[in-house]
Image (cartoon, rainbow over all chains, first blue to last red):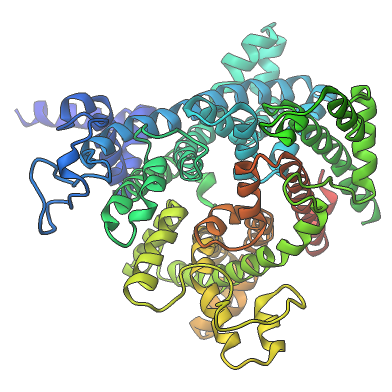
Length: 302
Length: 337
């Protein structure tokens, strides 16, 4: 009887864990990363179900209840758990809807700049020569203009709104993906398995996308995670300067800028959106650190 | 070395040309013709319009305009502000010392705290100090600095009354001429009692706010670089020799661990000079960042164009210098590529 019990255990130990499982094991060891993952999941759930979870409409102005404090301060009301802003809008509902906007900005900036960056980086590594030089010079140019200034410049040209914020921040973050992709594609291209694939007659498109790209993914994924949090911060900064999403959109940076005048009299109206930004960005960064350690030990520096 | 220098210099030329092209196109892409912006709502006669167009060179073919623009830039002509009618270069140079002063203080703050924090964290790897310091560093790195600034104002200025809310100097109490443009120096030169402490008090909060992100980056970088170096054979040898731990860490390891940290510090100078936009806006710090934002608000596009051209040029030059110094320190960089 004991043989029946021990055998499968021994057999299970003998098979190496699959890559996903191995990744999860080393990710789980990092407590901060797991905490980050939990918070990020909660924020994502709030964003997805904001219309169900939010107690009020984020735009509705309760004129009789302006500038109510959050529940832990005297004079508050349970109807508005985190208080109301200068126009009597429910802060909790606005923050919940704000998570939609911030995550949307972060994810779309990351996706667009990563996909564009991967294409440009692969093209740069594959073609070399004049195309490589041109792409690299353009990236140098983008990086030579300080990121916020460049974003401001782009927004000034195309006008301040949510979509244009995304466009501006995408351009700002493009170079990192291009350079990362180009560097890792170049180092992969010199390896034997690529030569083998070439010899066996694989076409360039298939070679780059199917053979080379998957081997460049780990650093790219880490960069993508950190790219989301950076994009959220950058977009909130633009919103704060009045160049991002426009009021009454419940974007966190815009909300913060709106309530600047209340800093002495009603500080929580200004403090809450900032706390929301900080928690979200911090959680994503914690997760990103864990991803980096689990996916690519070589990247542990930085 | 000369070849490395020349190659590195040659690489910046196309970047400069492209920068000139982008800033040149920018003013043509913004909504509203420069003339329309200038004439306001009252409107002007068609003759005057043509005259103005001719004055600003807008009736020339576009390539000619670009050549004129580049020619002007090369002669230090960065255009004229629509609002103040002053040359952009003059306005920029007037405001730039404020930004430099703030950036230098922020970088000093970040370095002085960041490096020891990183060293302590690395030498107590996995311990309470390490976890606390790195937790704080990651929080600093994730900080929305505009919010951080407002919170600090709320606590330090509004509640504790320790620091002033905004500006560089208390104009009611102190008035002294701008000699260097750096308030710390000017206040000392003026000899007025209390002027220097006043200038310092104005600097504290902006320095902390602007320095927070670089501080976090430097601390994290120092830690990981130290951890790598501590594994090296010569550190083990030093330990085996019986050297005191502080000597091993402080002298043998730190020296070698600092090389990547120095690069990070160097490269953040450029972004600091311009990253001051948010900090300057919050603290009404009269530097180039705040001026750029105000130029957008006033639709002063020539100022925006000239300002971006100047800031970006400075960033390119600073990064070039950092690169060259790095090549000097580390011959491996020079010969690679």
